[in-house]
Image (tube, rainbow, N blue to C red):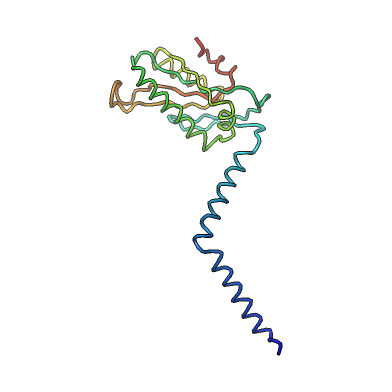
Length: 189
């Protein structure tokens, strides 16, 4: 005898609930969620770069000037410039750690606000150049010049636990910038 429509409906509901119960078990759902996240992340990182924005990400002023700069040549080399103060007489290990703080500080700000610029810099091998300045006044002038032409900056203020006084501005990170732009700042000596 053929089943009536209410019995078929109940069987369909039961099968639907069984399907949901099987497919949404943690051992199935969580790996699926993780795989979906990984594929989404890889898809986002694989997008080609056509242009990117450069802005000021100074940790001191927190102003966000935005300028759009289209790359003429996507293979144009980008470099991060690290400016170290000479007057503090820091040891080589201290300089290395302060440069690391500056590079990672600028990177962490840019990864949130200007991901395309970071990807382009990573594609260029994450090049960095370390130069020196005489004192705090010269560093402030370089920071201002960089921000005036739309370059991102990050200045490290030391915690004062070892060689320099607390709050001393030790290293200024600028960029990443297209190679000719850091020459404009007269940083190569």
